Image 1: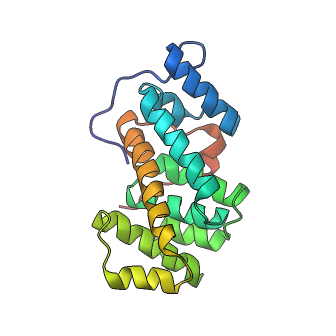
Image 2: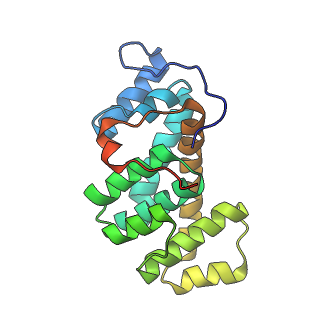
Length: 191
């Protein structure tokens, strides 16, 4: 999904970025090994990219979710927000790095029931938080806790929502082209 309006900002490189943007791009490259197009676009606001990178790293390293659970959260948010770029990127990460069962990733990508009860509860609660803007019912929270999660995990999903909102919305407005690394996992919301 892309916004009707496209920002006319250049995608930054290490060679042409302003000093602060270059510093953040170097941090990004150190984290992932290359500069994804999303980061190159977000670097037009170094604070945006730096906030994204910091929140993303904290969620990955401190959330208490397994890598597969983290990917379910990111995929659920990105699908709900209609971000083609992040759906492709996190589908690739799900397959190649986070060991998400293929049928779980495909279920999220296609908006179908997830064939794992705990991951289904995680996706359902994540989408509930996104849809209600952080106002889940007691029953929603209890179902999440009953699935084996802790109250702390509610706050960690809020962190993931913040991080993915930054990237999803930036991608919508920048019309970020998909990197070759993610092309095999391209996604487009069904009409």
